[in-house]
Image (cartoon, rainbow, N blue to C red; front, side, top):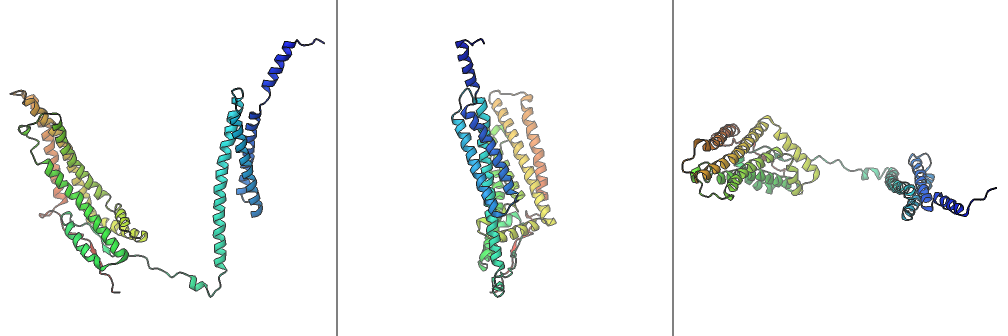
Length: 373
C-alpha cells in the first residue's frame, strides 16, 4: 500500500484539528439546549399539573438549569475566537438571552404565587374566627361622601366677589368640606386670572396705534419683532383662557389634590362640577366664551400680519418721499383683513356677553350650610 507523503500527513492533521468542534462551540450549543429544556420545565411548573411540593422542587430545578445555561453561554462568549465565531456567537447569545428572560419570568411568577398563598392563608384564618368575634370584626357601613357645594360657572367679571363670599363661608366647614371649598375658590381664581390677562394683553397691544404708519419712528430690525410680539401675546392670552375653559372640569382635580382633599371626595366633587357644566345654560355659555376666544385669537394673528405690513410701508416711506400706490396696497389689504376678523370678534363678544353690564350673573356657586354638630 502506498504511504502518504510526510507533508500531506501534516496538512491532513491540521485540517482535522480545525474541523473539530471547539470547546466554546460545544458550550454555546449546550447553553442553548439547556435553556430550551429549562423553559419546558418552567412551563410545566406554571401549568400546575403537580402538587405544591413537587411544583416547588421543579421550580428550583428550573432555576438551576437556567443558571447553568447562562454560565455556559457566558463562558462560550468569553472563549470565542475568530475561527469559531459563527459557530459560537448565535447559540451562546441565544442561550444567555433565553436564560435571563425565562429566569425573570419564573421569578415574577413565583412572587405572584407567594402573594396568592399569603392571601389564601389570611382568608382561611379569618374564616376560622369564632362566631362571637365575627360581628365585632365586621366593618360598619360608611355613608358615601356628598358634595356640599352647588357648582356653576359664575360671571367672569364677578368671580372675585363670588370667591370672597365663598372664602368667608369656608370657616363654617371642617375636614374635606373646608378643603374642597378652598380648592373651588382657587379654581375660580385661576380662571379669572386667565380672563384678566386678556385685558392686560389688549392694553399693551392698543397702547399705541400700531396700524398708523406715521407713528413708526424706529426702523431697526427689532421694531417689527416687538410689534409682532405684542400681537402674539394677545393671541396667547386668549388661547390660555380657551384652554382654561376647555379643561375647567378636568383641571379641578389638580386643585383638589393640592388642597389635600381625599380621593373619594375628589371624585365626588369632580363629578358634581362636570354635571353642573353639562347643564344646557352653562354648556351654552362655555361654548359662546370659547367661540369668543377663537375669534380673538384670529384677531391677534391678523394683527401680526398687519403690523408687519405697516412697518414695511413706513420704512419704505421714510426713504421715498412719494411712494407709489402699489407700495401701500399690501398694507391696506392686511388692515382690511384685520377689520373683518375684528367685526367677527365683536359679534362673538355680544353672543358671549349679551347683557349690557357685561357678563350675565347666573350659576353662582353656593355652599350648603353645615349641619349642627
